[in-house]
Length: 342
Picture 1 (tube, rainbow, N blue to C red):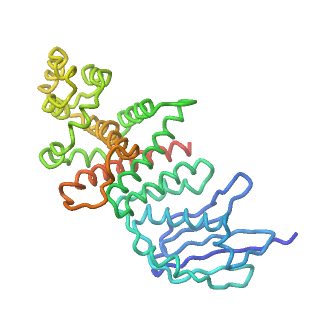
Picture 2: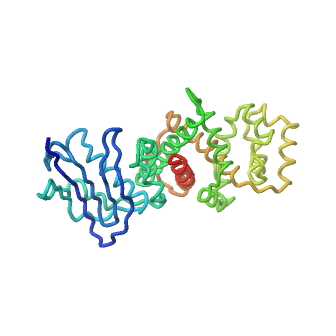
Picture 3: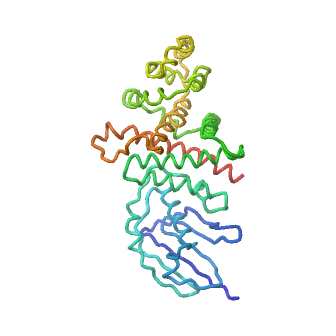
């Protein structure tokens, strides 16, 4: 049976030929093809026993080549932060090359912008084997969080990416059903045990007056259970700055908690120790504050903020939280792609 050598080339309007990825593009155990991604373009090569038709190559319902191209575009955007203008898309079968009309679906690619990048080597895992699937899912939501027009959609997409990531991390050491609380505990422990350079740097830069005191402390602390409060008492947080904020907002806790003078005294004693543990602040923001915001949104416990009148009052904190989530994803993505390759 004859085999037809075929390829799809997407040429960008740039002369920069820097390589971003070169290797296999995994589809399933018995099928993988070759892909090369450079700043100047994307080249997908494959052999089949049947000739593909240019008009059907990207348009059939289960097109493998379209799937490859979508992954390639995601990697390009994730590591470069933008996609250049497309100058041409061509399809080659054996020695015959024909152009493919593309303006109808490529004209909006130029508007794609991402400010937080992934390392090219780490990002390449999405092509390498079945291990890359969860990382590709994370990447798509990671990018969507940076492309959306609505601030709250960006937050939700960022959380979806993180949700995929911490579910993946938790499943490495645990089997069967796991509650979100247990998964978040695993995430908090992971952040404690590993360096988190980009997210920690961002957290350390947050201003007390313009960020920390602008958080909705009532909604978070008024939802604290006795079990959660006991964790604070027993030393879940050691950071004096964060503990000081908790003490400052004592009055917003539930009545039975804020009236517990004995435990509050234990907490207040830790403030004067001047311990700096910025990871505690990161864990609090991600695993407690952002998760609380996520629940209010995903379970439709509040109206969707469709019409923003004051960006500063309504979305500034949310945008900052989104950035912190994305930087947390970046730190953990780099860490766990390396582990997946071991």
